[in-house]
Each structure stands twice: as structure tokens, then as C-alpha cells.
Image (cartoon, rainbow, N blue to C red):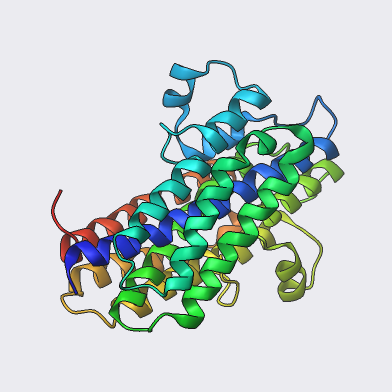
Length: 308
């Protein structure tokens, strides 16, 4: 497979996943602020903290107001992590490989971008935001399911699966890191407001129902961390995402360096008692994992993509 084709498939999957994850993150934060008293609610800055683009944001927008943050995360075409930018980039990557992906998938991605662009003003209003974000999420999920169900599961599909799971792993660690730092207490016994915020962490990753089903306990800090980092069955857990990347890499040639980077990160995830980490320990652990994810991406790019 040509390096450029492999890279475009990989990034198409990452951008579709990014648009879905960002839409869900904005929607969950909107609901969280309605559930918490004003003096306790974390506001809108944590969403920018999750993206890691604070410097870029502050240079253009200044204060972390609701409208400004929403504009940055949904509509800013100069910010590669905004929903509209991700949809545009995903569409462009798909356009260049239309002979590789099923025609229906290209049509869905094109329609998704057009919806995101044409309904943008509605999505920026309080009244229209929920419906707009819900449509983005549902359409992204439709594309993911369509590709899984109709695209040949050959080497091209392995790059698609790697891209989707790299984005999931990155977003999962970022959300946990920022959201846990904004919680009110570091003690095992949560106040009602802490509980609401940990539920929002799970919902940001569509994990609340699956957590209750798998862990069979009420929402508690340690169990949430263990579920989101180490679950073998939840698709958005870090461990599950890394295992999917590994399974795809195993089917590719010249995979030794990428496998070594994967195994290092997997060992760190599986050997750490995440439920016992305090706030600083959790932050250091997430930093280590983020470096590991960066190494995995670099090895994939070196082995399979064209040099920049």
C-alpha cells in the first residue's frame, strides 16, 4: 500500500473520531454546568485544557467565556481540533482515497461536513446546540460503523483502525487528566458534587452505562480510573485502544519499532495501580502515557508514512 494512501486513511479515521469526541465533550460539559452550583461548576476553561491549546486560544479569544470557548471548539477553522476543522480535514483525506473506501462512506463523510458547515449557526445557539451536537455524534458513529461493516478488512482497514484508536487513547487520557484535576477532593469518599463530576467523566467517553454494567458498584474515583485505563472490554478504555492498535500493527510489515513502543506503554498501563494514585501521581502517569502515545505515532509515521 502506498504511504500516502495509508496516511490519509489513518488521519481520516482520527479526524472523524476527533469530531465525535469533541462534540460529546461539549455536550456533556453543557449538562454538567446545569447540574452544579455556580460556585462549584468548573466553567468552560477545562475544555480548552483538554485540547492543550490554551496559548493559541488566549492569543485569539482571551477570556474563557461560554461563547468564545464554543466558537473555538466548534467553529474555528484555524484550530485543527475544532469540530468543523476536523470534519473538513476528514472529508479531504477521504476525498483523496475515494477509490479505497466504500462509496457510501465517502457520501456520508461529505454529507456530515456539509451538515456541520451549513447548520453551524444553529449549533452555536443555546437552543440549537444539543440537536447539532447530537447529529454530529450520530453521523460520526454511522460512518465508523459503515466502514467497519463494508470496507475490506485488509491493510487499509488496519490503518483506519489504528487512527481511530490512537485518537481514542489520546482523548481518554486528556479528559481524565484535566477532569480529575478539577474535582473538589482527593479523598475516597465523594461529595455529591464530586460524584456528578465523575459521572460526567464517564459520559464524556460514553462509559457511564458500561461502567455500571462492568464494575457493578456506584461511581467511585478509583473504580472509574481503573475502568477507563485498564478495562479489557470497554472500547474507549486506554488498554482496549492500545490492544486494538497492537492487533493492527501485527498485520503490517516492518512493525518491530512500533511494537516496542506499544509494549512499553501497555506495560505502564497494566502494571500501575491507577486507583491508588493521588492527583499529582495521576498527572505524572498521564504525562508518561502521553509521551508513550507520541512515540507510538512517531514509529507508525516513520515506518509507514511519507517523511514530512
